[in-house]
Length: 323
Image (tube, rainbow, N blue to C red):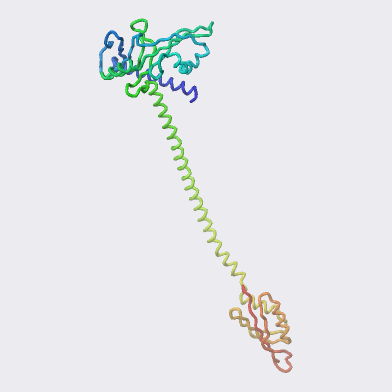
């Protein structure tokens, strides 16, 4: 997380905490104040204030419960003090750090010596847990653990609060706000991509629907155009067909001028011609050159009469495909 974002969240949480304290001070002034429980070896627990179920208390132990060590460390260790102390705890503390609640405080800084004074304090968990358990049985909530200061009202250090059953660290209000903020950010990071994906899918569906409608309209227009073009296509194909009139025109154009046709018979593709001509073989030849006729054959030829100079002929042929 970026430093500026961390600072923003801490500022936001501090503002919310201050507002909640102000509201609580107006609604329930007594509950806003934290009770103090003094712990010493000579007398039982002493509570400053009225005991009510659910109120927060702080445990203040006498100095004879704690181990306090005065240290002088180089000034370069100050920015990384927590990690540096955790590495030296096994050497400085009288027993295992896992059995102690520890805290430290910077007492003084000496720039001329490039050093600073530090107080390291530790309390055995076996001393804290019975007291915390008793306080919880009274219906109170342990908020913090301290050492008694030089005066009766002052406190020193702030030790972590442990649960007597599991020895887990109890999160503070700031930790709760940080966890809530992290949960909100996690939910937002999950919901935002889901919403964006849904919106993208919906936009794609709408675009597809719009495209389909436009495509259908274009296809219908194309079908209408094709329907309008079909009659023209049929008419053009019919105009290209070779009919009986064209065959007759072709035959009369090709036969010689001294040839006379008496019969023109067209049945399907079978053509039969009959007439008078001085040269029947020449008639067959010119008709064979026609692009629309095939299999031109002279079936018969005989003299039409003495002195006529012409022969009576009969010619058959086949009209080619497409005619």
